[in-house]
Length: 302
Image 1 (tube, rainbow, N blue to C red):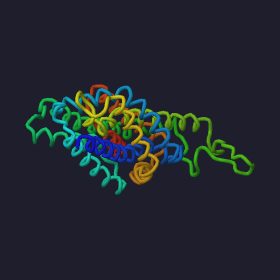
Image 2: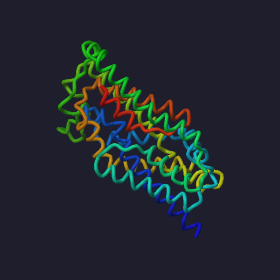
Image 3: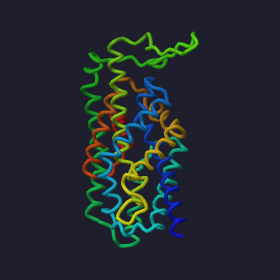
Image 4: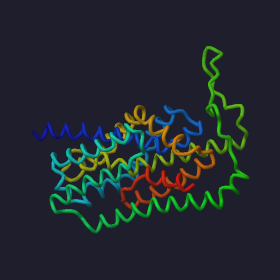
């Protein structure tokens, strides 16, 4: 029975990670894809690589919080762990099917809180800190985006404006036997610097997403009596992220990159810096928080 539950837990964790990859890839690389700096497949590959770095380093702090601090680790029995992960994944799947960036951290923590309330073991003091961060982080991101957009963006745009390309930044010359990549001929040296900066910051956001979201996929399976070690949990989460990144992430990439607002490259750079920094700081402190909410709040403010 335990063996079957173990297999079920791993499968459900992959299901959750699959949906997290679908949502977070769009949040991290939506601005870069919307500005036509990278293609969707390239964005997925970069996301997986840098999410792994974030999960393997800073993400361990968030895993510790969600696997043993919100509720005691003993409460994550095989059945409870599978239930928490299943309802987390189901909620994320619904949001991804509609192409809406979802808060993976809020969804996962909400499921764990339900377990804590049912067993009367919820760490209320810690939850007060986490919920406070959930309120402050998007408001802070919105305020920064608003202030920058209202007072600084016109000045920055005058001296650091970049072209938003009608065609992709990297083009392929297929006239020969072997396709040869070349930079968009409409790109000036300033555009090249700005484009590289946006992609670098998108990779930083992927790092932040991995740090924040690995715990959402595997925390109920990791712990003193858990099915997986922390290292195994991180690897499982990142593999599942990759599955979602290369498949269902396409809808969210379109939503963040094109549908919410027409983002110039400079705006993409600002959004990525603000959203990624807010979440990286919270992840370092071991607080699960939503990259999707912080980034979307910055976009709205800007």
